[in-house]
Image (cartoon, rainbow over all chains, first blue to last red; front, side, top):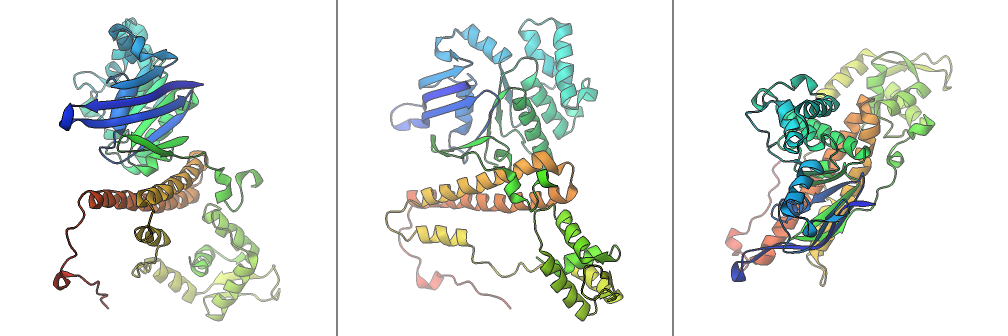
Length: 241
Length: 191
């Protein structure tokens, strides 16, 4: 069953000669619990696609359906609620609010959604706990390392009942081991039923995904087929050890 | 890959049987590189001939023969570890040749060829990454081997990305004319 569905989505900016087509006729289905990576060079339209999927931008034409509900039929308030409750975002530069502690950063979207402060705070601590940064809950972003800030950002994206995680270059400037750690966390969220779309130009990050979709000049040009079991790479598969 | 030196490294830990060396070799490469027992004994014979290992010989050539490293063998393994690996000769990489050839064949979209190889490489990387997910936290050797393979494949994907960018730029701005012979560069191999 798909949780996110993009049907024939096109996004154009500007008019006439100055018009730029950022995304053209894109169809994309993301199943419940699936991790999809979107790969493409800078300017290929992959970040725009993510913004449209997350209802941060409106498509010029086409349909976006999240959890069975078409965004086009929703009011502004309904879309805002969807963004607070259902969709989690992870950005390259973390986007944590500097004046709030790690725990407050994570609980903020819940509190904005009307969840009582105590319950929001407990949910935030549970999310931080699952990412091994509960001990840093009372620290401010500038007191955290890059890896810790990213964990807090992911905690904020998966806190409470979020069902769709959208990440734009989620390993940012982290080294490859920390990049792996970020992808393991996203994968763990998918194993709990969260659907995720990760936009990246990094092949090592993309290779964590169940499926990799390739985008070029705003169009989806190709995608991977599920790879065979990794056991074929080993001299003695684990089952026989 | 030097099986010879890998076996010397294992013997530097203490005397071992041929079969034991095979098992430890495979374990030390995260079970990614299989090694047949015939190759183990052939290599041990050569190492013995060169005075780098010795065996008690009491069991003839049988599996009960124990091999141990000699002082010359210990010296050899230490200098091999520090010696630069030979990366000087540019390999005739088949992938590079395919992309260069695609430029010449009429009716072929080079970007499609690039994408076909990019997809294949990423699928292979997905397979290696699955191993990392299941195994690598528990086995340091496997983690190191998998990382090496992923970085190697990643470098090919990056080259394809860069090739794709160059091709796109070249298709938008084709060179007006060939460079004059005076400025044509030749690759000179320094010796």
